[in-house]
Image 1 (cartoon, helix red, strand yellow):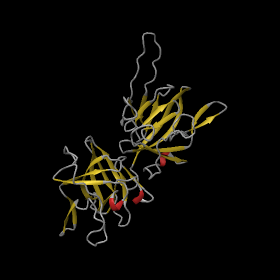
Image 2: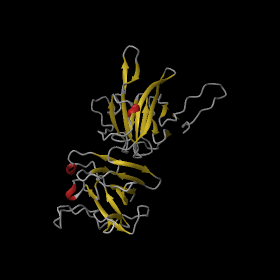
Image 3: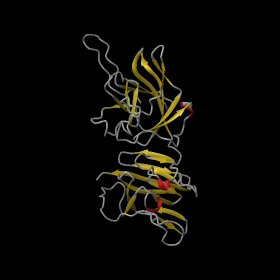
Image 4: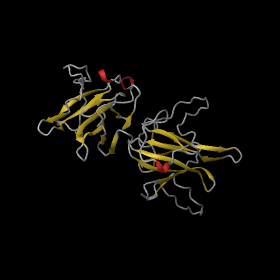
Length: 343
């Protein structure tokens, strides 16, 4: 990947042009460096860390194209009080940037309202630096961050410098893509949909997924939590609604439809997880009929159907099971395609 951002040209006066808002360099080893020209006292510089590019949202508070924004030494997340996105950050003090391969299971943080009365939100990365009271300079603290991007991808992130040729307000950071957190084996984002594979091979433990943030979550008390929308255990799929949770999640099956179709959201036909009705000790899961069982080969094959799922936040998602098996044929590794449906 080459340098991103715009490059200036020297004017007729021969003055040196200002550096571009964002410059990203591919180191060639799977890691990247991004330099941000955040010298303005008023304007934020918004960056997408899918590729380290500069974006210019018309309305940053509602736009989902950016992940982090920089202004001087401040950095904001597109989540919490700073934006409408699901960007969140895990803070890993003392963890070496080079040692991180997988995203952790949290805890995840977003920017929160002003708590100390200084008129500034509580930015998650507010403590990225050490301040030298003698020289009045900022230097990066020994902390690595993991950023859960709006795309559902994750990156390791570390500050390297705050100065360019002695001029402050020019953050230099390094970052690298990470494997998904535990529970999500793969997560890929396509133009039309997302695709996720879950390690649900345990006979005892559920894998809980938040559709909005494309992340596995780890609620302390799942039935009392609104962190998750859908959960997997072997071939079972639970919704955070009815007997399985307090999130109000519900679904409607659409037979013969695919996740790629132009789907209309119906008024009727919505169902959620119900109490055991046949005496087998298992709830009546709303998505229980997602598969056909081959009694000869003892294999599960997804039916020709798609579910619409209303998440805990009221958003609607098209959900289609693709396979129940890993690449090497092991069971308990469901892969599903999904996308948000805008009414």
